[in-house]
Image (cartoon, rainbow over all chains, first blue to last red):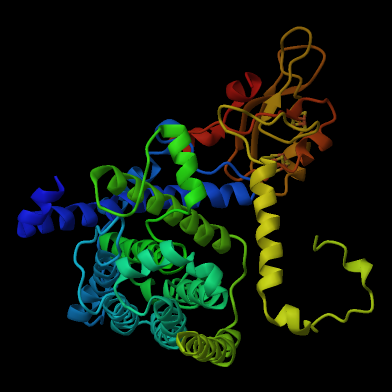
Length: 349
Length: 157
Ligand code: SF4
Ligand code: SF4
């Protein structure tokens, strides 16, 4: 199996690409379902439980509804950009996901630039939001688009600096090496707690989720950048947000929570319960399977955190958001980076 | 958790302090609070229409015209209810009653349920206890015309 993959790089690449495209796309409906159920539980409600067993087919019904909606474009929109914007939100998040190792050495492609590729591509999503806001010919959309671009550019800096702290621990940008380094020396969340918190907070801002959903902000901007979008174009924005959430969780897991690995005591538990001995020394089908399981479990936990936070916190005010970004997070991230670099250099001597 | 605001009266509102400005402790507190709601699993909503909430006593739903012991409508077409009705939704046409104990009875008694505000004034005004509000509230129809209840419909409610 492994040999076959190694011998047929093109075919295996295509298979990986299809699977890794299909999987997040299939996770999104489930995620939407869980988001609605969890938010209902937090608010002491029951949530959607009518369509199918325990309401699990609700997202399907929603998709059918969205497909059947009339696709309306308001008067005066800039047609080309208006149509392009949803795709510009959706595609970068999807591409960024491609380089995350979801299992042991399992990623669609592994460029030399590693995680920097993901961050760079991921930041293209801001064009989607601001184009959507600009092209809609609507003042609320425009405000939402402007806000999102300012917000994402400021938090991207903090995100990148926090990410650098994790990369410096391993001394590489190759995510598989980062994970292997965490197997050897412990998860980065223990070695870089400040970086982990900063990365988490910045990723909330990057995905435009509450408490940082200033771009959408339904109570003051109606829907922000997607006010004028209907039907499947709206669904694309929606999809983009959720895929970005998955990508950010996956990146966070890989960089700070040990990626596809598990601490030894949990490996012992797996050994006791299922009778499989897992060692991350070489790639076999069994380890591959278990690494995917570990990775999915951690990513799901983080996705739960995303949802949980969204239904707990109120929205930041815009000046608070900017103050937090520029005056707190970036200085702290820089200080963290400087201290990390100093310690690493001192340890080498 | 965050409820006992009276515990520290000297703390001025609006002053967060360094820990408050760091947001994270407050956020953790909030997260625990919402998690508590998930764990408590005490839902306020019902699986309507599988489960229904028992109506409260005195609930004002759709009207009913009552009958006396002989099965005749009690209404004597006095127009009190239609006079008092703030929504002007009761339409009565009187006719001579064939019975010796009263002069009139309603020939037509229509209530436009779409205009009614279910205030219960008609029940309150009626001298003969001929009209009352029931606990029924959920009768769907396909046209507006069906929601204008005539005498038979009101008597059978
Ligand atoms: S309940 Fe109020 S509004 Fe309705 S018919 Fe009686 S008096 Fe009129
Ligand atoms: S229902 Fe009562 S108030 Fe109305 S006309 Fe009949 S007797 Fe009079």
